[in-house]
Length: 394
Image (cartoon, rainbow, N blue to C red; front, side, top):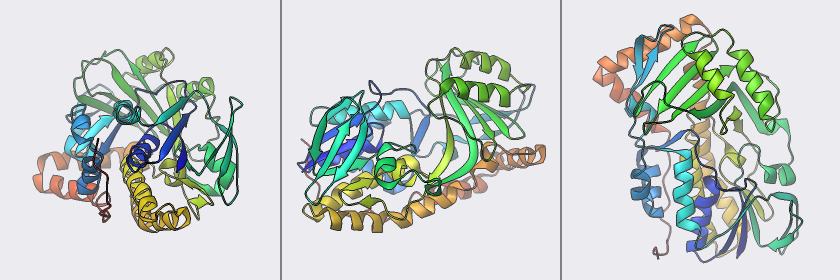
């Protein structure tokens, strides 16, 4: 089949890898002018995620770029360490920067997949035989299937499923991420500082530049996800007067050319497909922080492509099986993500102290560390990966 994928971050290229191996003609359209690098660290944890990476033939390439992060120190306003987040818990079994993951996926697919950067879909119409799409550049083409892998703010979801607020469950946490010169002397380590309803995290996975994350809790905040100037002002206002080295980090934020801001949101839909259009990854079932979003994207890509092959191109049957298999897994991961605000941005000094005491105790009680790691991995492994017939790598 001739299949169009919207989105070239993680879910899109992961699906393109599988579909091209099964013999389909694949086009990936991405509104960014080029592959987007940088970004935050993402992780894979447990046997399901790692087995999927093995089947993709990418595990060794990803491990070569792994962060190998040490613990993240939790500090007070003076910079003194009061607790630590153990790397074995927050980094999973394989942690990699999102931009590095995207580069590995792109390198594995670019010779067999047509990438169309700097463009996006503006209209989608379909009939029993195919899907007609219109591009922002003015072109119009027809495909057998269209897959939306274009994130929380999915254009495919808006065009086909509508842009109802009922689809979104906001978790109340907002955050900005950017890189800056390494002023804290970090190397494969990080630092976290929290005040009620706001937290600062600085990490340097590979030494050199620091990745800064500024997160705050404010349920119901309205903002324009396209307006970066407005987003920088929001961060500046919410972190005004914050202690530690926050003022220094805010100044660097206004100089950063890779600033990114968004809300923590879950996506809940009654169905992930309509006719010949289907959603994958955050576009269809964003999990939120701690919801195994990256793992869900690559596992979902494997299942969707595998079911299309099993159904011999019957997209109705394949989409139904894909959703039936993935829905319980997604629900489990989304449930786990619901408690993320208490960890990321505790809203009172008391909650901050409770969080810090908890992680301090984990550091010194090995049994607690093993138990917590078990629960941190439990949702990621709550899936029986189907044994699809996969063409040999060429």
